Amino acid sequence: MQVKLRVYASLAEDTGMDVADNYGFQIEPGTTVSQLLQEAGINQRDVRIVMINNKQADLDTEVRDGDEIGVFPSMGGA
Image (cartoon, rainbow, N blue to C red; front, side):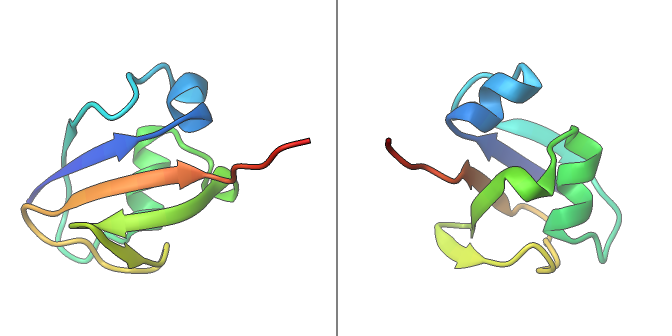
């Protein structure tokens, strides 16, 4: 199965990925968002919001062929 992952803000900086670029991943059926993040080298503790095909999801949501997953860190101000 093929999915696309987009990372935003500090998550992109921490992984060396470009913000909002699509990164393709080949995954096995039954793979969760959490497992995908692990494969991509993203610490799931740093992820605040997960979107799959523009709908909010959880880390334990299984991804499907063709899904576009976006992950956002916690954002805050001082």
